[in-house]
Structure formats: structure tokens, C-alpha cells
Image 1 (spheres, one colour):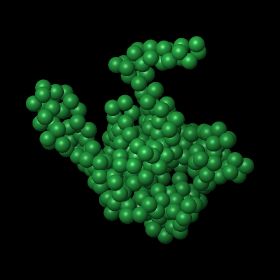
Image 2: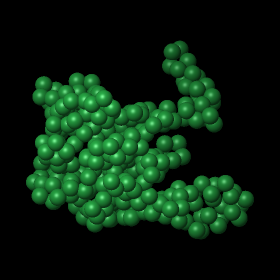
Image 3: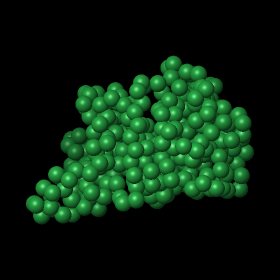
Length: 294
């Protein structure tokens, strides 16, 4: 069975929910303290054994490539100022043995189309897809869990979580089948953003997937769906109807950093989990709460 070494990062979105900040800066580079959102996803992929990172970019996304590329001038300045620790940090954003490939999505035709744009770089290999908007935190991250599950099932695997009934209309929702002894859930279908009364379950698919390469054949023939776009959920639904999709429960905590409140929550929780910031940040929060309660 092929080992999964490739991952696709669709980063061509406009980030309109964060305007005007994203007018000139890609939303994927919005920082969680001092680390861009997309870097969390890249580190998650590398920790799962991924060595080939395929970024699907669009207009005004050159800065994403610049972030993961070498910057020899910056490194030289840091060394000259005696800041070798910072030089090592920026040099190791992409560690040795890991390569980056950048492909262009010429038009914003949907997530399914963005994944299809990566096909020449993926070839006939299984691959992961990570949406940078979904920041994951925990001892076990979903990409590692998905890669391990694929080694057992050799078919498309989704990372899913239960959501509140009032939130099902925000996500692709599973039509689940049986769950085996290992916790692998068979998927009979997936419905993109159903109305609450039409949702087949409260199991929602989030921004982590592992696909077998046959998904490209489906995406090439897929007609535009919701929003007149090529929807990745529609391709997953076709595979599911053929009995070729399973799911596992997301083992980590997810932050929706495409949403302003989710982004703020991620910043707060990452700060509270950091030994450098935890105590002074807690003191700041207590002080602000005391001011509000007066």
C-alpha cells in the first residue's frame, strides 16, 4: 500500500470575512500570536509524515510562497545582529527533506476545482487535504489519525465531529453507516449544508481529508453544484455511494479561523497554553474582567 507523503493546501480563497485586513494580505497568513494560521496546518502535515506540500494559490497569494521560501537576506541580518536563534527558526519553517510546490487556480471555481488543480503534482498517489482555516490543537492531530486510518482501509477518509443541530447548515453532513470495532465509520453519503430538518445526522466533515487518487476522475467529470462551483463534497458523495468512503472522529480541538470569533478563540487558547504567555495573559484577562464588572 502506498505511504501518504503528499498534502494539498487550498489557499486561493479571498478571505472576505476578514476585510480590510485581507485586502492585501492572504488570510492564511493572519497570525496566531507569532505564527501564521497556514503554518499550523503545514506543521500538522509534516508531523504526519508528509514530505511534499502542494499549495493551490490564486491572485495576491505570492506572500504564502514567500513565507515558506528561504530568505537569505533576512537570515544574514539576524546572524549579524547576534540573533542566530531567530535565524534558525525562520530557516526551519520548512525542514530539510520537505519540499513545497505551488500551483495556480486560475479562477475561484470551488474547493473541488482547487483540489483538482493539484492533480499534476499528486499523480497517482493517495494524498491529504488540509484547509488552513481549521486550526487543530491536541496531543493527536487529525492528519496523523487519517494517515493511520488510510493504511488500514485504503480508501478516502474524512475527519468528522458532532455539531449542534442548529449548526448543521454550515457543513457537509454525513449520512453514516455502521461503525466498526476500531471506530471507523462507513459513509453512505454526504449532504452539503443541509437545512436542519433535512440533515441525515449531526456528524459534520471538517477541513481534513485523505483521498485515494480516483477522486480526480470524479472531479474532472463533476458538474458545478452549490454556488455554481465544483464542490468537493459532491465528489465525496459520489465515492460514498460506491462504498469507498469512511470517517473517523476528529481527535483534536478545532478552531474555525475563517470566523472572527473562532480566530479570537484560537488566539486566546494558544496564548493560555504557552508557558511564556499564560500567566501574564491570565492576569490581563482578570484585570479586564474586573474593569467590566465594576
